[in-house]
Length: 517
Image 1 (cartoon, helix red, strand yellow):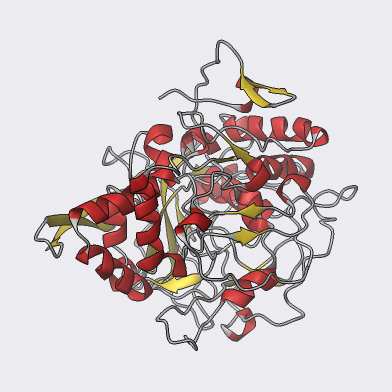
Image 2 (tube, rainbow, N blue to C red; image 1 turned 90 degrees about the vertical axis):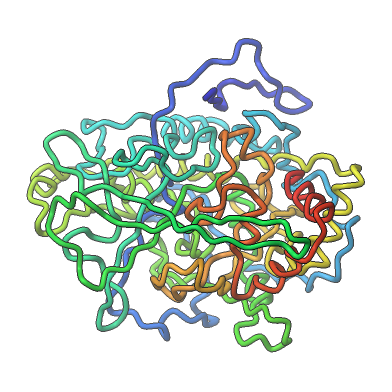
């Protein structure tokens, strides 16, 4: 597959213009083969510890542990909450500038590779370094491993896009990883033999932990007009285990790597706005009871609102990046300074970076963070198409926008490009009960086993163009957008049933709208 990078482009006074003769990059890599890095569960924390209080929602400290001479990229100052969004019409959401001033007008395979066109010139050098780290093919000499899931960030996020489930059984599952935990006295803890993330690859002289095996169960049904459909429910098994048995009460959660666009914009939505959208007890009786995940912030030592990852398990882009480097590549940093080797993994212990400085210096952590924060959002397409307009109306009337909130406002942010933007990410970043069929039955901080964070929809219609597939949901089980809707249960069940009741023409219109995003 053709891959692209920032260095294939030059900046002009009117925006970003392609250079004749794009270079072809060999991409073999992974930051967030994870939606975020492995959860490091604090066994002493309780659910009560993870509920928001006024003193816990603080984001004003500088990251002295990362870069003492600069304010850390990714800090969200507290600002006044925005007003509650009024009832929307199709005209309100048929908007080209999905990313505000960070929007780019691209719709080909390079649609996710450009930085925000309003990026400050002073940030470009750091961004280029961050992109190089994202594309780098890491080796043991540069800190890779000993155990890992991939060898570079871009091996999962090809073209900064979305991964799919593995196509070759028995091979390392680039793009999909498996989170692990077992019940503990004060909450979930890591598996004693395999830790918090199953690592199916390794450097030489170290045995990988095993193989992720996927089988499928067929689920059949039909729409109200009689059109049949078939869903494939994945059934996961960990095989060829190298370090002893799994705990008998093992909890597993598969995750595919999401697209990278717009992360800084999501980070810049004020905490107060997210809290204002919560309704944990469904006080308004609409069947939607979103709530925030509350997670440890390693930089500040506080408990903050989670924003990134399929269960909103990471609070900031800088921690998201550092966690993924550590869990997926075995690369240490000031936020994750320890190689995760369990007691039976003797070779891992022997080859870990004992006595060395961390693999990723503090400034480099911020460079990769800036890269992830400032990837531009592609514009919405075909907004004047009557079918897309009809689909937008159906999206709103079906209740999809109750969780996939179209419009958000960002506040002030250390990265000026993402500050004070009107954006259309189609997410509330909240946790919602999605029903038993999607449940991983594995808690993650305040999130329970049936809850998932609302995934942003911007760029979703370009996944096939950018990444060559149409696999969606947290583990890529949905083979297209229609199946993704059909997998919704729990709080999404009513909207799913509305979709099932639509005519074929109406369903096609709704999918056309999603494909325009």
